[in-house]
Length: 404
Image 1 (cartoon, rainbow, N blue to C red):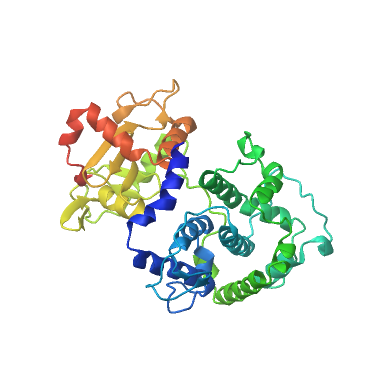
Image 2: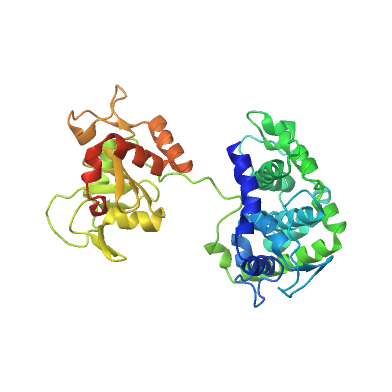
């Protein structure tokens, strides 16, 4: 119910803003998609790689009603009456979905994922049975390299997350019953792909899809040429892959003594000194920092803050998760003035953590505890965890967290 309410509120919340501002935003979105190098767009050819397809779909769907229209024709004049309607499952929204779907398929072909582990490609090795549209686009992106026999399977796996997100979005937006396969546990692409394509009214064949939509096929050809031009300038080395991987923590050694050794070798302090310092290991990126130390202070706006606080602003957008090596505790930071400590994922033979290393027992990484911390991070629960801990323990509020 929460997701349903959020999606429906999002589709109507734009009504509270200035229509001219919304119309200009909608125009920039469309210009970025259809004319990346136009004066209205803030994008360029190489940015086509980086677009988040689902975020683009949601923004376009919600922004479309605010374009200025006159009858059935689009008008560049903002003075005309606006055709304001809630997003729904009509021909306009399906056209948006089709356009973004083609873009996402091309994105995945640029950074084609490896064959999924444990899967057996159901496709023949004969190139003539691979879809011509996929085969031609792959050849242009990869300089004529041999086309993988399981190309269609890899593309399916790559676009599957986008299709699932789109189906859930339109299910709560329109109220149309979702495919039964989406309600099953342990879903896989082979069970869901056909149902998702049918629910979203998208043809299974990519080539057939483009041939039945000549304008979309022309636009796809232009995207291929733009991406091909960007690849020739070696832009791909700077870009991420599609689909986006689920964020995870930096790798941690199994034995805690390896972390201690890593901290002892740290040489990134701003002041060279023999003074014993407390190092902290950033769980998100793996960087070692000084923690709660006057040696490493940084200027954040008008405030002087510690290395961990400053790093959390640049690495986690104000959220920080650090393993304090000398204390064997996890430091959670939210903003520059809130924080708390939680148990470390390193435990002894009895499964108990050893805060401040008082017992001195050998410690090993508990994957279960680490996964629990990761779930809190992925679910955006760090702020709630910090607030809850500070409410329960009044002494935490007296700490100057910006010094950490």
